[in-house]
Image (cartoon, one colour):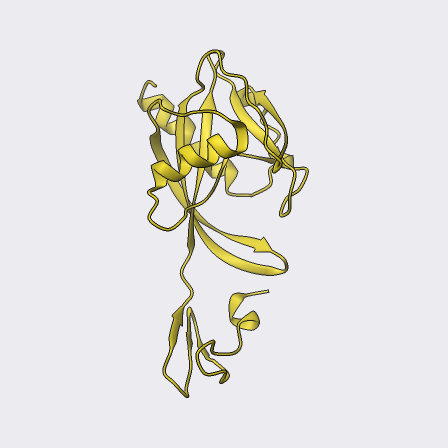
Length: 176
């Protein structure tokens, strides 16, 4: 369900919102609420064999499906800070190595029956040698996949295919 159908009343005065595209506007008090995408990150980590690390989601949405480490950007946090924090929270991995921007995409994020717009920034980096991931409670398991054996039919989010295409293009032009 779209946000416009869920958020019907003004939090300031309680009047019903007027609805126009990506804007909810209160006709009584004039409050405007723009429906902008929520920024988030995804990180592709590549080990010395050229394999990509994926995590299996332990929570909805997409519980039991493969995902990239990452998550929603918090207030006063850059995309790079967010990527490092999320990887550390999800896997206990300190990404002090260089993150390389590979691309971005928009995609709806369905949570508790509501579709929220997102803007995801994807990074690629080397997996830190000698590191063993320690999955947190939102990660059921992790696994490395060769680029040819990625479980695309079990991706949690459709846009992950674009993330990997962007990473492949980046790696073709750059060394990390």
